[in-house]
Amino acid sequence: MSPHKTDQNAHDAEKSRKTARSGLQQYGVYSAIVFQMLATMGLGFWGGNKLNDYFGYESNLLTVAIGFVAMGLAFYNLLKQLNNIQKNENKR
Image (cartoon, rainbow, N blue to C red; front, top):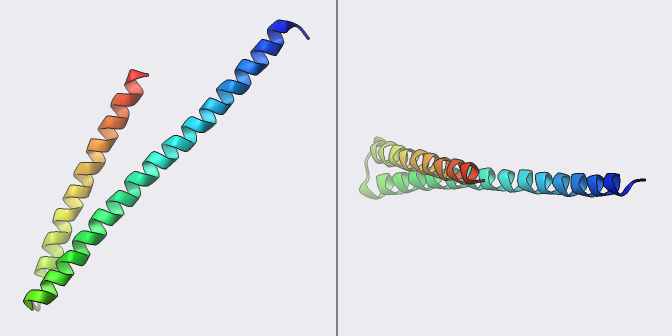
């Protein structure tokens, strides 16, 4: 085997490891975003339900209102994080 092929194989193996690591990192980042969204919305609806029970409303007005506010915050956070990811990708 020529030294050039050995160097090329080592380079290809290193590139493959970096690509795999990058894919796992992206999976972790996007998974974290999903869990943050679920937690934000879940806490919003749960908190709205608790407040609804505390104030004794028969309708689920506070549950729905606070839940939708939490959904709005979750989507705002999603867009902000995706924008940051895109900026970091463009720097590379």
